[in-house]
Length: 306
Image 1 (cartoon, rainbow, N blue to C red):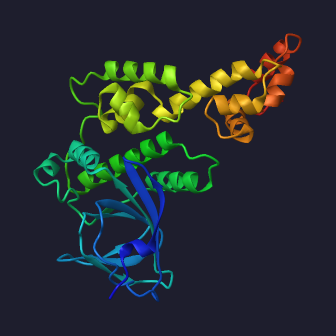
Image 2 (tube, rainbow, N blue to C red; image 1 turned 45 degrees about the vertical axis):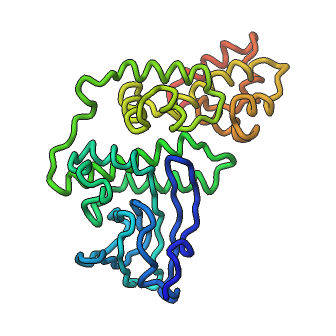
Image 3 (cartoon, helix red, strand yellow; image 1 turned 135 degrees about the horizontal axis):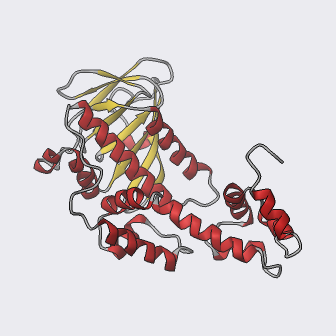
């Protein structure tokens, strides 16, 4: 008897909207060939080559240049190609949101939401693969996991996978924005929410509830109209507020970091340096009335010159 699939997986992140895990199985593991049916609809980024065969389908090679797709309860088997076995990360999204994203590219998904994925795999691309590696690294290495960034990024991954599936099936690409959609109202509503609550650890689901729009529609419209992701907009508000507070000599940098939603002084320092090219302490030392002009001139020097 094979071991349950869950024994090969370790959950890395889970929220009401998205979940993802790393899956590791070696050829010597009992249950390597058959680890049980898929427990949820999921899309998978292989890291090692392995042969997969869905029940009733033809075998195919799952490797880093494809994204494999599984509907819930999908029965499948694997065969080894290398001694590395099966190493991958799988991603699952709330079934209703999943269907909405897929249907935006393939309306036939609404006809059978029990089997939203129509293909066993789709071609991958380097940018999508890199994006999923970055979100995995974030949740495994960051001092403080940013749920808004993670949820927004996973929906972006799903959208790109859905677009790849539509292209693979020869379907015409969808318009970037739905005709007649109240896009300006969506963006303005969320900008107002973020302006009031940018210090809070907001989730994409909460922003969707507050704005009255689906999380997929919200994240896509905001990115296309505002030119930034929701997470990037929130972080920019935090950093610009930090700039004002850091300049005040009486403030403690650790307190500023916590008040603005950063996990620590070092977390704020890294974000501040990335945005402004200088650490908070160095900025405080130079942002005085006597050295303001010197600092301004340094910021305006052409790149590569000191």
